[in-house]
Amino acid sequence: MAEVKVGLQDVVVATSSICSIDGQRGILTYRGYDIHDLAEHATFEEVVYLLWYGRLPRQHELDELIQQLAENRPILPEIIDLLKRLPPPQHPMETLRTAVSALSLYDAEAEDMSEEANRRKALRLTGQMGTLVAAFGRIREGKEPVPPDPKLGHAANFLYMLKGERPDPEDAHWFDVALILHADHSYNASTFCARVTASTLSDMHSCITSAIGALKGPLHGGANEQVMRMLLEIQTPENVAPYIHNLLAQKKKVMGFGHRVYHTEDPRATVLRRMSEALGKRTGQTKWFEMSKQIEDLMIREKKINANVDFYSASSYYVLGIPVDLYPLVFAVSRISGWTAHVLEQYANNKLIRPLAEYVGPTNQKYVPISQR
Ligand code: COA
Image (cartoon, rainbow, N blue to C red; front, side, top):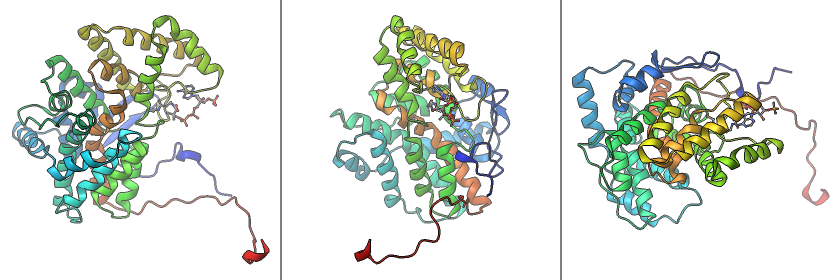
């Protein structure tokens, strides 16, 4: 019997020059640049360029990308109309998955597999993702979508389209950092799905629709939402210890903790912890950070399990005023940059991804006519 690696754990399935993770030392790089360096100095737009082109942009290249992203943010009235006409979803990720899939029907280059067309589709999808999420967020509240403002950066523009008012510069800065931190993470489940779909030489929109389906799950992009629901249920710092002890006693998972690859602190959580604290102070809502810190200390002390990217993003998004059920969609607003970079890399050097499974079902069965079963 071949060795079975359940969940593909520790299996290296390809080479990639986009993103590296050192799970022992807690180091994450995009194209060789440490995530802490990027979070401190870069903008999301620079990171998008880095992921797509393999190097940091020069000023005129960055200016061009900023302009192109802004030009590609508006979505067609047909898509706005679709968002209005779709039934209320059980979860907003259903609407995002449907809307992204529908975008291909209005994209004249949907089936053009040339590299130039695929790069243009990556640009359009990255430009449009935030607009879709913000438009959905408003439509379901009975409000009209706010058109994108080409003068605003990607992060500030998203908050503006969602809330209808220009964000505080500090909020916009931290949200930009959050977008940088979520932009890519090597062969995570959703990116792997995107690459599997790309490996069949299916189109870019299909790849991204596959990825959104995988991101939706509570073990992946759905975790940040669950973290906030937990914090809201706990409500007060005094309730933290009994609540978490109760979860652990029932052998339930505490959302926002643990990671398949990191065996030490997730380097993104280090920055997000600072973000949660800073935003809590700025908005006068320090309770969520304080409760989060208590939970983290307890999990490390008693379970030796570290917080992951989803833990402190929850309290950060909450004080930014982002509705809780939109958190996984906000993940996609950033991760679209990484997904598209990976799809482009897959197309450039493709091999069909088609693993094996060890068959453990019954053998030597003989067909029995239906009347005799
Ligand atoms: N809370 C409590 N215990 C946890 C835990 C958590 N969040 N994450 C892992 N563990 C424990 C498991 O119960 C298991 O213990 P056991 O060996 O006694 O059964 C052990 O740690 C290994 O966990 P496992 O789920 O098998 O590891 P994995 O590599 O398959 O899973 C995750 C990784 C991310 C899916 C897992 O840590 C998890 O479900 N976390 C919560 C969801 C989450 O935050 N996802 C976002 C990831 S960025």
